[in-house]
Image (cartoon, rainbow, N blue to C red; front, side, top):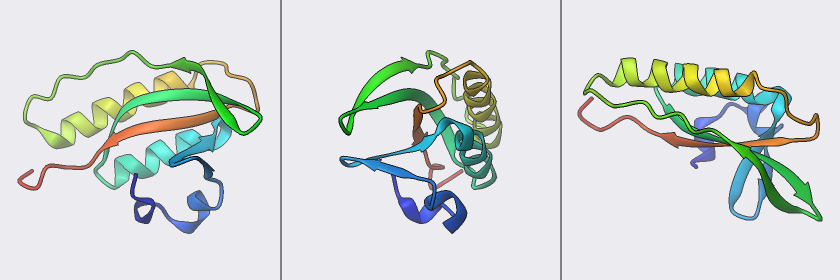
Length: 107
């Protein structure tokens, strides 16, 4: 994930685990909102619990949004699904890792 995609206020809350980046669950919705505004799709959500600085997957999304050629509609739909996933109850210390897709060059 290219960290240049994020403003300083979200970067300052990011947690790097190995080569991955995650955010506290309380911040994850703001991250998804930012990604949607930046025209980036959220393909999936993973919830992690850190155990001795090693992520243990606590849960994950299973939504699938079909891309029909309309990138704007796809971004809105994937971000809506991600937000719905983030409405679920998770432990307060959980971290959220997002799988994203940037727009095709010929959107």
